Length: 47
Image (cartoon, rainbow, N blue to C red; front, side):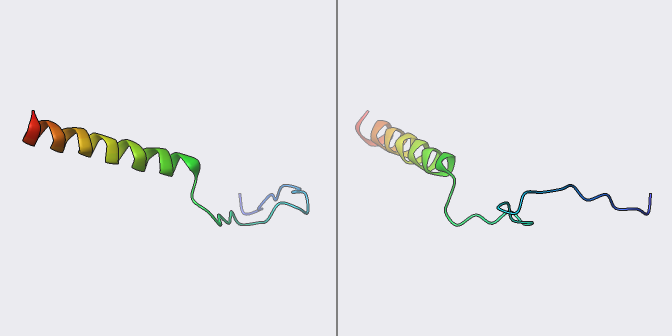
């Protein structure tokens, strides 16, 4: 249990996950949020 087994990782893969840009799903989530807020506000005031 005290032994730590390390995997053989290829050299082009970093040891830590480093994300330089946001994931595409973040942009999709924000677009859905803004769209739903638009529909909510539009329906509340002009419905």
